Length: 328
Image (cartoon, rainbow, N blue to C red; front, side, top):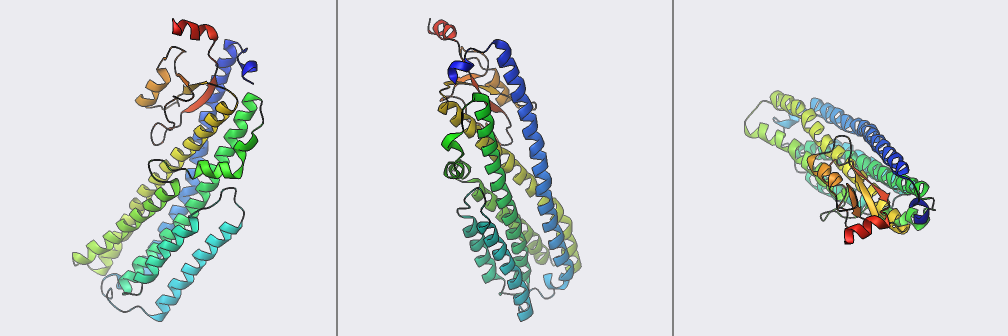
């Protein structure tokens, strides 16, 4: 396919760039759609925790050290079992991506909360908040895996259409899982997500602890917790949105590079997004002797260049004359 593309005129490359810029806009639009999907999950967590706080205001301080009743245990265990069943259902549903340590993450978190919730009524409340975090993590992790799988597969097919070649093994489930669950800076996207959920849980626990230490009334502690609940969860939702955008960009970039290498392309061009930062603009404008933003595929800077990066890579042909001039 390289021989066919290298004969294209300069107008072809201009059109190719225009189409890539449209593709960037489509990615940004898809990001917003996924953000709305995330907000549903986070808003539900806020509502559930808020209702629990209202129903157990007296337990937060006055009866915080009281014994956990059998009714408390049963209500907790019922919810924990429903989370496990939902996780198992997702695992058996035949998603495009192997879930790997998905169920392990959920079970590890549940074991902790199962142990601590029996200490006293306060720990029971905190463990119930933990259940909401597990439910939230379950939903977000599963949806993000499916999104990344779809983003990778779609980009592989798009590149196939551009280059006129079949997708081959690049679209196999094993390669898809390998790309999606790859580690960056020592962690997978799923591991980062669950760490973020733990951070959120810790922040909510701290609000309760601070109220008790300061001797606040149970109504005031409950009110402060509800007031801080939304802002804390919303801030954490932004972290998840950033993770989703960054990981989507990463798997698409990997699809682009694998497609270029598989079709014999040695050069690519970095196309910056409309809201590109100074770092990405510098990459897109750097001239290595083949034109602005043109790099050897093996030497192109890692994409995404930073969290939230939405630049793209596109196959590029360097004329032999340009190479000869550069050599001189």
